Image: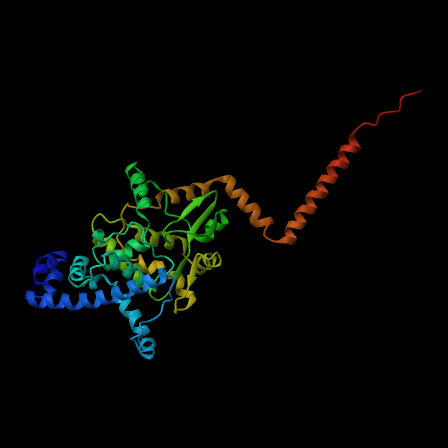
Length: 359
C-alpha cells in the first residue's frame, strides 16, 4: 500500500491530496483500513448475488445474529449511501490491488463488479445493469454506479454521432414545455416499459415515453453526486445533468407532477409534503453548470415541432373540448346524426319528381 501512495495522491486534486496529510504511512494505513471494509462488503454481496443466480434464497450468513442484522439494517443503508458520496471515493485500482493480495485462486476481479451492483441494488433496484461495465474502466465506486444507472454505451455512441453532425442545443428555440402544456398540445406522456435506464426517453407520433423514476429520500443525494461527477470529470457525458434539466422543464407546478404521477412516470416516496415535491428537480439544477452536450436534443426538437403544428393543435383542441366526456361525445354524435338526416331530407325535397310515363 505504501508503494501505491504516489499514485493515490495523483488521483486526487491538490487540495484533497493535502487533506490526506504529508505522512505516507498514515495515508497507507487509512487506505488499507477503508479498502478492507469496502472489499468485505463487496465480496459479501458478490457471494449473495451468486447464490441468487444459482437459484438460492437471499439469506444472511449463518454466523450473523438475526437480531443484530435487523438492528443494523438501517445503518447499512446509510453506509451504502455514504459510499457514493463524491468526497468519499477511493481509487478503484487500490481495491483491485488489495483483492489480488487476498483473493482465492478461483476468484476473479469480476466479483468486485457483481458485488458492487448487488450492494447498490437496494438503492435503485429497478435500474441497475452491467452493460459494458469492465473493471479496467472504473475510477471508483461512484463511477461504477454511474455506469450501471446510465445509458448503455451504444446509446452514448449514437448521441456522439449526432453531436458531431452539428446538432447542438443552441439550435433549439427552447427546451421543452411543461407536462400540462404538452397535454393541451395533444402530446401524450406515457411510461416506457423495459427500458435499460431511466434516462432512455423516446418520442414518436405524439407520444413521449419516459421510464419510471421512483423518488425517495436518497434520490436528491444520488442526483447531486452523479451530476457532480459529470461536472468534475473531463470528457464525461452530461446525461444526468440533461435529464434533470429536462424533468425540470416538464415539472413547473403541482399539476405537472400530478400528470406524470397518474401516468406512472414519477412515483413519489419523498417524506416531504407533496405540495413541494414538484420542486425536486428545480432545486437540483439551481447551480448546475450547463454545456451543449445534450443527448435529448433530437427529442426536444421533435416535441417542439409537433407542438407547433397547427393540425396537431386543432386536433388536440377538438379532443379536449368534445371528446373528454362520454355524455359530450354522445351529444356530438347525436348532433351529427341529426345534421345528416337534415341534409338527406333537404336533398329529397329539392330533387324534382319524375312524372309516370303514359301507357
